[in-house]
Image (cartoon, rainbow, N blue to C red; front, side, top):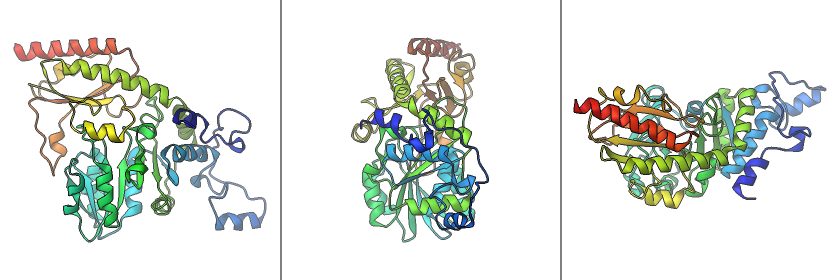
Length: 390
């Protein structure tokens, strides 16, 4: 089946839906065993059926199966947030004395995890240039066990050469983890590019309505036993109500994503024409860094990108963002609403140096009419330029 059909059909087994369109919300902690032999059988194989609420109910199984099918992996586990999925996947793969390689453009909380808890656990991190490609070979140590990638990168949208990185990692018997939230399960076939574990903040496009915290991690056959063992050992689970909302959001992901992509590209192209914009960081634009890799590895884009101004500072950027009507200031993205976030990448870089003539602004383009969003941005530019020209 085509992707758009799979996203409708996946995870909707009749034994889970009970004859209705959507799987019900099965809330459970305790699951009842009719006979002692049933309990003994459950202990031998706790994932063969209902065992304990933390291991999942048909609500969880439906989403896990759907994401696994869309990603093309061997199995998926659910976590209470995207960051929990990242942390859970990392901790399932490493131990004290190990070394990991992490892209310098990584999601900020992932960087803090590496510099904090992982360091305290005796796990060493080396941050690397996201555009390093096969050159990552020089950074491997005898104890390197994991390479963490994010393509495109958080804030600055660098596209990584995942096949080249994966080839080197596998030659060193290391695993490759990808934060695949930007592409969603629809726009990148992570396992075809050599990735071993694909993580999503389902909070974002999968849920799509800014009202749920949820994460997923899908692994290939090589990494799935390790990922699953780590998840069950650490007790990772997710609320069935949140999982049900993610299932509902998943079914409309293709149509929402098409609108996010089209509107974001229209706005990115409009920004490119402005003299007060230094650079538009959108991988789908031919002028953007990494565009050739984007064309090779992705089947589409989403609504998230950044741009830099050619003058001013973060001390003056409030004149741009404070009175916007449609672009609201806020973290996260992937919902139906548009967001804007002024942020300085320089403060979260160590292997590379970030330089730009003015502030960086990250946009999430929602489902509003793009002409209204352009009007909102045009007025923000007017306010900003009046301040700088005063």
